[in-house]
Image 1 (tube, helix red, strand yellow):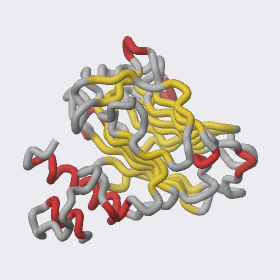
Image 2 (cartoon, one colour):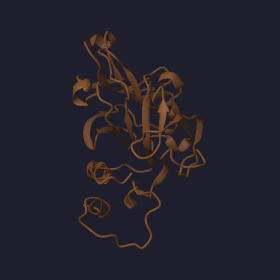
Image 3 (tube, helix red, strand yellow):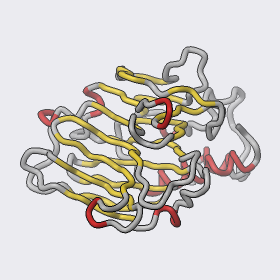
Image 4 (spheres, one colour):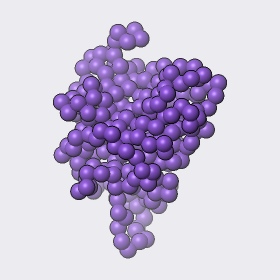
Length: 256
């Protein structure tokens, strides 16, 4: 258990005199953090951007984030959250993670875009309903598609997210996606492993030109976002679980 999590759970006392600049950013993640946005800054830009990334089209700002304000995509604002830069290429170690919620109930057979890493082909996570792939109701999908020389993967990993994620309630959820060795794509939901895609034939390379991260979608239902992070390393199961557990502990004691 890391020191930040112990502090969040009330199992340790602070050993520093000054508070951390960002309470919800664990010190253990700062080393290889390349992008961090809370949507609370006065500048309207990311608090940390070490690549830097270009925000092609930013989300609108909402008043009800997980902590403070939120980014808003889809719905009436008709915007996605798009970041572009060579540092997003998943041929190197990469972790993308963020908090999200659907403020309106997800209807039967409804769908929404969650995230995509786009270039010459893409890796994406989304919810889709019937008649797509013969689905009877909304399902969650991790897709690896149109990557030259790599077999397509259409991984339907949750056939009942309206129940498992309580999509009829405006609950906040955490999603993390990691790419290791240019081949292993792992997905986590609320701190726990959800599924993975093992890319066959070859690893991802810079030639795939995957340089865009998109969260939400212009034509999707409204999606609220918060605490968006990109790291140039692969977080493991324990690190992701500890992060989610620590954030929930801070929220439970009213630190917003």
